[in-house]
Image 1 (tube, helix red, strand yellow):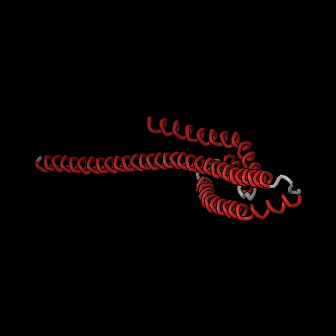
Image 2 (tube, rainbow, N blue to C red):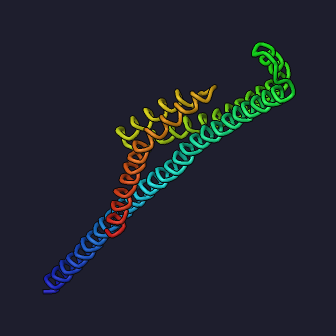
Length: 230
């Protein structure tokens, strides 16, 4: 009888121990599973956050590049425009001095021959012509230094933009840059007029390029908003 009781008690103790061990093992398994799930969720959230930050950075870079490219486009055009004004004014000044000199010679010597008039006027205008020529050369040097800086910045911005804008927009931007780079080198008023005509002709294309970049930024912002909502 005592043996039977002890056997039952022993069996009960063993069963309790086994139940305890199994439940403890199950609890550990559940804890590990929860920890793994939490780690996976944290990793996904971190990846989403990094992707969101990267997209935001790219959108900001597009806007920054667009602002600089726009500034450079119109800076180059303004340099050419004001160069044209200065060269035109210099030529107008010289032409006015030429007319005044001729009028002076005719008033003081009504009988002067055409040949002598030219000779005297050439002599009297020599210093004025030299001064105007020197002024034009100085102005052209100033212009060339300015546009070299603009070209260098524009080339750098095209290179930066290549990492952020679509291939189609990049090709259009590169084409615009190459075309304007060829037309920005001027030496005469005729060159200035041709360059301004080129800029005016490409302004519509440039505005379409601006619109395209802004469209990509808008799409990126909308995507960011949707991602943030989730």
